[in-house]
Image 1 (cartoon, rainbow, N blue to C red):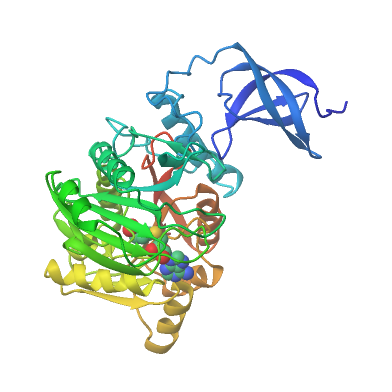
Image 2: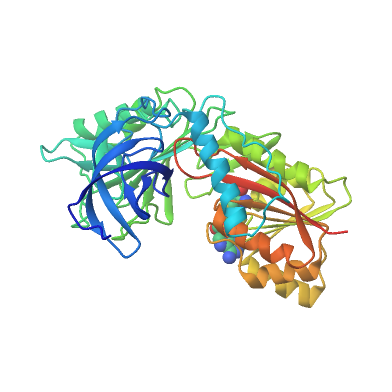
Length: 455
Ligand code: SAH
């Protein structure tokens, strides 16, 4: 049996793909269907075929999934941000829990030996993000559009309100939009690499309520900035207004140079008792409510009593390191971005934490080097790598250092499972697995795993 382009088929959607699309099978042949939801029975038209899978367009929902809900945001189907807002939240959590479990089983080869804790979801899975980056453009009629990219494209969906962002963004965006229109400010055109305003970045401290607004410009100068400042300062808790200069023709949003127009060059926020200064360029977890839960889980799994030496690899601005330093004898952080390490050192200072030291460099280079040259030691090693996971050379050094516990924080269950298999084939075992929903309405899931030395 062959499936051809333009075939019209009826299938049942059984799974969710990595971009939130529905996945179903027709006589064993896998089809990816955008906007179809797990539990739907749908009629589709085949658009593109490969050897073992293809892509199809949704023509009609024949039987609607019992898990389908009305998305709160009417742009949810188009916007690239929330790919599964139309899926019941409990079902979103179940999907994420299963995603981790399946990866551990299929990729890691772990079976009944692992008992996962139930995933920790959000009580109110809306307005949770503390950071927004809105692209700015003009539509065909010449009107300013500010919003988000449509899924997989660079066309901007004009948005006045985003249900996963901090609520105050609505006010900020209105003021920014009025300002851009009233003073006829030039807007950046991506294709021509011409024009001024590229993106608007906002950050909100959920504990302190402090607000940062940063204009990403294709220049050093923002005309009529006094009028903008005056308008934005009408919003309570406005703390930092700045310009970031990015003159490159690139998809990378931020340039390196930041000029403070008004107020402080940073906002301050807390996770638990630790305070962090966050500048426009700093990496900072986007969901502060769940981050606190995530870090508390790391702390519990690390099981510190005050005399431990801990290495926190991929430490960013030292968020986890400082959290752990409260309970450890000494923490060492390693991070590849020099600016982040500057922030980490400053954050240690403002919290009067003296038992945390930071190193710039790749974890897979710094740790083996320090181990060979200085015979460094660790009771606990925490890793929080990007999606590609850890390099094997790093895992090899971890095995040689033989810590009692490894706490693995992961944003990709597939590479997590691969790395856990490496450790568990060399004297370690998975003791606890906790998934945390950091990114409600997206398909992403964060996981913390306690790996302990056997015996
Ligand atoms: N633990 C931090 C940051 C986690 S994000 C927090 O919770 O906030 C992952 C971090 O790994 C990023 O800051 C990234 O810059 C850094 N990184 C990426 N590759 C790295 C490598 N090879 N070695 C060290 N750090 C790396």
